[in-house]
Amino acid sequence: MNANSKQATETDALFASIGEGIIATDDNGIITRINQAALKILGYEHDELVGSWFPNQVVATYRDGTPIGMMDRPVTKAIVTGKTITERMTYRRKDGSLVPVSLTVSPIIRDSKPAGAIEVFRDISHDIQSDKMKTEFISVASHQLRTPLSAINVYSRMLHDGMAGPLNDDQSSFVSNILSSVDRMNSLINTLLNITRIEAGGVDVRISDVSLYEIADAIISESRPGAEERQLRIKSRVADTPSIATDGMLVREIYSNLLSNAIKYTPAGGTITVSLQEHGNNVVFSVKDTGYGIPQSAQDHIFTKFFRADNILGEDVSGTGLGLYLTKTIAESLDGNLWFESTEGKGSLFCFELSKQGSSARRGKFKLD
Ligand code: ADP
Image (cartoon, rainbow, N blue to C red):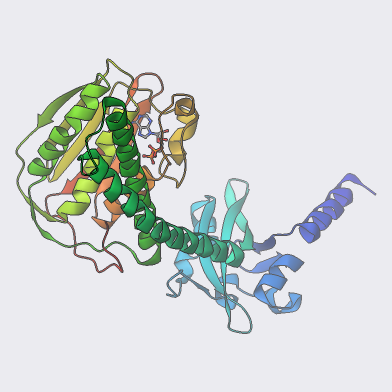
């Protein structure tokens, strides 16, 4: 067997044995090769697909069911742009049923020109189903935790206020500790519930005339005692910007998440600078800290659910990795931009920008707590 035919046999074996669907096309999008896994996912026979025009023969839709035009199909984009494309979408099987897939299409480049493409895809129905079950579980568990927690809260407050008789210093400090843990648990439950609500039906955005200045100013005042306790200085550079038509409660959630992170992730002696400024047609809120910073390797994952960077795990700072995921989702629902810059060991800068045109009202299924 010569080297070329050995290589071809190996490629055939690789094609056949891989568990993910693979479709190879020429530069016109005509299917030249397809493996068993792809045929199984799509419900076609080999000869029904090989030789046909891929975007025409296998219908694709976005996740909301809208058909994807030929030019927007990943295979077309990969051939036209020469770039690798990764997307999630839905394919229509031969029997008309729909299958959600995650796919990557890479162009085949020959003599610096695209000569075709290879698409690798997998059926993600199980992933979607298990994500849904996880979300439902979190939602039910959080609701069930709320009732006993509110009883603990009420009775501890009554003890604290001396309604069951005066407390000595130790008793009073123990009850204060219980109360602050109850507050932390309450806010964790609210975050979990808000996430399940967002995932189930999107955020409700209610528009009114909002003074971003008042929100930023109030949040700084509320955060000062906690910051002082941690020996941090908050510098305010908050300008009295014009009011904007947006959802004040959601803006407050974003601002306060960014500031509370800066306080959490800056060691004693540090400085946090909060600013609100007009930049052209936008109003930018920013929080700069002199804290632990975010390692380069973690920066792509910072808005992912449950992600916490390695460098803070040893620092005894509690957290869930949910705050920024929630913040980013809310920022998008307000048509705003959220971004950050950070250097490990030096500090971070988080910015949230809203256009002076404001946000659009949106009917989500739920209101946030
Ligand atoms: P949590 O604070 O509950 O862990 P977040 O979603 O708010 O969750 O943040 C995710 C991760 O991003 C944090 O665990 C931390 O590693 C990093 N991070 C966020 N803000 C900062 C900051 N200001 N400085 C350093 N790291 C930060």
